[in-house]
Length: 501
Image 1 (spheres, rainbow, N blue to C red):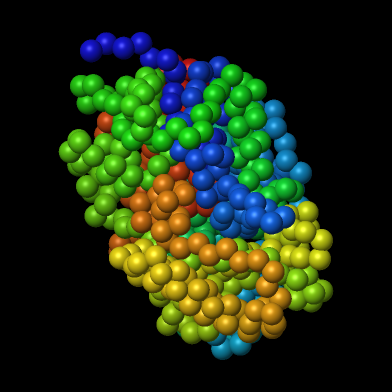
Image 2 (cartoon, rainbow, N blue to C red):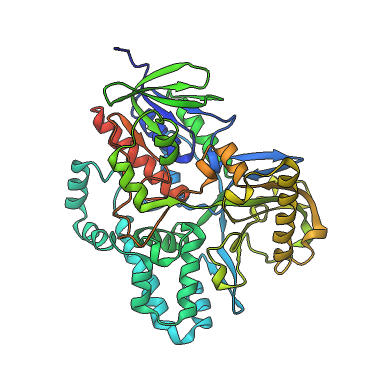
């Protein structure tokens, strides 16, 4: 069978990784179609509205909106298609509430953060400074070069000749994890546990399993580019990327659920939708997870050896129990920070519903809630299994019971929370699976065991000719800025493969 492709590239899914890929390709003049199963773009960076509240689906701690350097990938992705977003700077990344009365804030100002941490661990003053300064070494290497596809040899050669020192610096850290570096500088076991939490809050694994390259980016960019919240909510990022995509001739279709990647002679040539429609393209990009891509969209094909090896190294992270709350504004005293993490016992760091994450975006953008109210979005890791095989009544009862326990724990940092509630929406791993189309509602891949840094993470090309993956199950992993990096890399590699530069 020979078919004429309708598009240069078809992108499955409109998460940030998929949209950055699509907009980068459209900006180069390629014909691009994005297929989104839901009614709005963004995936876990989307939004929903209830009773005057505009809730972010996922977290509201956003990197990548800086205005200098090369690591401000969300700013750069929007600019490539003529878009900008007004953002609101957050002076504190996280307010930690941790065991042993370890209560401290990660300030935007680097020295203020160091001084607050050193005050908690004065005997480790030099070790603290040495560790975080080494993270800056990684960041400074990244921040000198254009971040594109590491699969493209000519790009690598060009970057190496332009920035040989930075490239060699990154090569040094590629196989290393944060725990390896931390223990070179720090001995205090409680401080090392804090470093575990510093990693876990965005990688969902402790320091020994977190690549140093990723930590160098996060631990430094929060002080360099800063945490900046998009006015109007996180969903504005995807909406603006779609506006730019269409401005440059690209297309997006909503309610278009891809059920199959069409192949011919071990080459991806198109997709099939739930209604039986087939659409053909010169290249196919999956913004689904690798488990969904090769387990669902290619269920009739044997699993490639490359994917088998990847699954031996990586497993699915947990999903989340999420509460989207509307609360009376007077609950929160003046000086309350936007982002909080609560953990009462270090042994519970990685356990089911152990660590609690909190975002209060209305402290930055009051327009997201009715006058006199705030949004509190709180979530905690939860696996799908405890939510399975329940009757509707049992499911509803478990949601209410688990939500009640979460609110009770949060009363420790927000006294009076229960009485201040105006609205509550409860999401479970089943909700994440249903609305985000992610197998088991997973947040993304995490290492099964200790691995050599980022080296085992796959890039964008796959074992199937013409098929690319983008998003959190490709290099460099989870987080909006990370999947934007993946999108830049995927678009670059795909464009080169099509002879476009």
